[in-house]
Image (cartoon, rainbow, N blue to C red):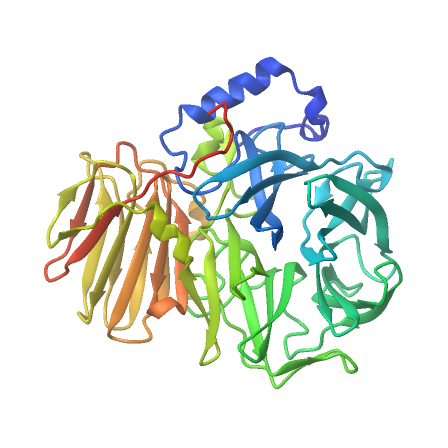
Amino acid sequence: MEMNWTVEQRYRRIEEIDSVDIDRMMSASQLDRGYPKYHIAPPFGLLNDPNGLCHFNGEHHVFFQWTPVGPVHGMKYWYHVSTENFVDFIDHGIAIHPDQDFDSHGAYSGGALVENNQALLFYTGNKRDDNWVRVPTQCLASMAADGSIAKQGVIIENSDYTEHFRDPKVWKSNEDYLMVVGAQTQEKKGCMVLYRSKELDNWEHLGPIHTSYNDFGYMWECPDFFELDGQAVMLFSPQGVNSENQYDLKNIFSVTYIVGDRLNIDTVELESHQDILQPDYGFEFYAPQTYLDKQGRRIMIAWVGLPEIDTPSVEHEWAGMLTIPRELRLEDGYLIQKPLAELELLKSDPTEYSSSFELSSTSFCLSFSTDQDNFQIELSNDSGESLSFCANEKQFTLDRSKMTQLYAEDYGTKRYAPRVSTTQNIDIYVDASVIEIFINDGKHTMTSRFFIDDLNSVKVSSGLIVEHTSMKGIEGLYSAR
């Protein structure tokens, strides 16, 4: 699946892509039976980080990184879709083009802040000089209520960190704007850098936020900071970390969070913080971003994918998708994740099964409650190729060693998660080639791609009663599909 893309090929702009190639890529993605129905995926090319998530003008706005040249990392655009209910979407197309000197080699990731009847879009301008040295800056654009977007230019230049300086996330605290940026120090340590401003155009560099994890990998990507249920949360994607236990940090890159009492702006410290935790124990979960909607819900969406890992969907000219939206709350130091209530609108009438059953669709949800020490759910085809999710009294196991198409085997074919209680209420969302499993009452999830040709059955171990619901597809995206 590895493709030999040249730099020139990767960094072509969409205007340079022949319409015949676009039609070919669109057709290939259309024909892929692994393309999801109710997850946001690209029309073709590569999708990675969610960007600019916000609730604005009565709609949830979702932007994402998009490389249109093909299923490869290269020239990045912000693509834009919106929805009132996560069922019916509006496809707005490209929102931010890399068309200025400061973002000439890509409009990289960032967040949004809704204020004064506009959505302020913060992103990293990626520029390369003649020697291909990266010159990153933090940039601002604004989106009006009519959807028009205007770039405001560079607001922070980089003078303190290596070229790894990206992914701004901004929020308002009293009269101050605060921004975190993912960065690498000159000592090659990952950090979450804090800035402060009164007017958005003059930012004071306060330095990295201090925690007991000041030597934790070589880069922290996609930082997010938010307050939830009276506490402060740092959420980020560290690179260059691993763990000796069988659960944590097993992917090429993982996601972690730290919960503390509050962020002390004067000392730039997350006060009285707990140990670092991992929200997801699957094979592919990265770059999550959160936002508040008008109901006061803290909603998280992540990329179902990883840097430097190709999945079999690249053969069909597309790669990457976004998770379903998840509502967050804090409980006993854990970020509790729950599928957003609007997803119920996509569900058909449920059917209960206590044994194996045939699938009429590969887009469905399974729900069950159990206090059994040992159980198993297996998705399979007539050839015996399968994906299995099982448990014993101590842990959960997701095993994709028997898939039709294996990949990323250097990082293993099984993932494990701790079982923190005997009684479990589990939801499993499956959509053609992606699975999202909610375990431990939402304290953890296991998110993964999987590839089984002609998937057609679910095997349920003895004693389980499983509720099955088919899932409808979301509407309004990529009218050419």
